[in-house]
Amino acid sequence: MENSTTYQKWLAQSRKGYLELCVLLVLRQKKSSYGLEVLQTLERAGLSINEGTLYPLLNRMFKNGWLTSQWVTPSDGGHPRRHYELSEEGLVLLPQMIDTYKNNQESLEILKELK
Amino acid sequence: MENSTTYQKWLAQSRKGYLELCVLLVLRQKKSSYGLEVLQTLERAGLSINEGTLYPLLNRMFKNGWLTSQWVTPSDGGHPRRHYELSEEGLVLLPQMIDTYKNNQESLEILKELK
DNA sequence: GCCTTATACTTTGCAATACAAAGTATTATG
DNA sequence: CATAATACTTTGTATTGCAAAGTATAAGGC
Image 1: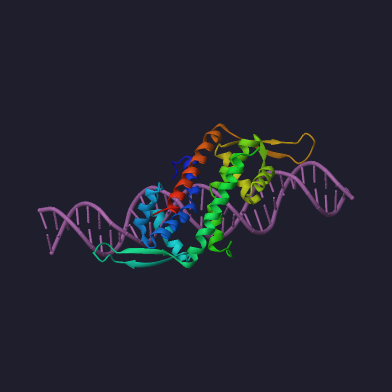
Image 2: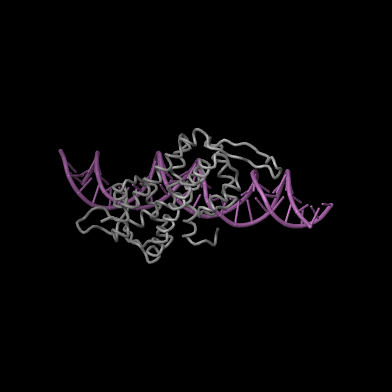
């Protein structure tokens, strides 16, 4: 990342926390999903995310207890997938995170219109 | 921070990048301001920020070339203050950052209403 | 059967930053 | 002159996005 502008570095930083929220939202909808499917869903929502970012992120969220996880082999064959679902804790956290983002957004609006 | 919940850790992470944007907004309005005044302005906008976060942040933004800086001694006496203003580059970056946040917000909305 | 490709996940190393806590320096007040 | 208030600095820790390389399984062509 040595050749990045300071703005590009800022872009990476500004995604911290945000990506977790997005993943929780995907899993709330899908009930159960796996890495590449989450990735494609985010892509369709206009959010491009690196594999090397997403997989460790899912793993951390699992370790945090926000997700449950299990290996699933598709019944019609195919590559085994590690599926994730929201845990009880994840279900509790999600609205709190949404609220945090709403508050941040409100502070931003205040600051934009500062007199 | 060892006693923090994973949620509290997430809160800290989710402020990365966001704080820079807020500071730029304050300086766009104030034209020129210094640490403690920025801090109080953010406070009034509903954003509590630690001294040990803000000062290094202002310094980094200055080093990035987003801000200009000079020491000012109030004409009526008082403690010398390090004043900051938006640089040309800061003025260019600010709308880009605002746009990034708008896009993020839109992706969030899409993910919230995902069918 | 074997080789290539696609799918899916893992690992490693690096750089950036929010925070807490402690420290420094200057000015004002009693 | 001592204390408090203002204002900024420094240090150490933990976390995380990303790039790049690696591992493993399944499917398809010959």
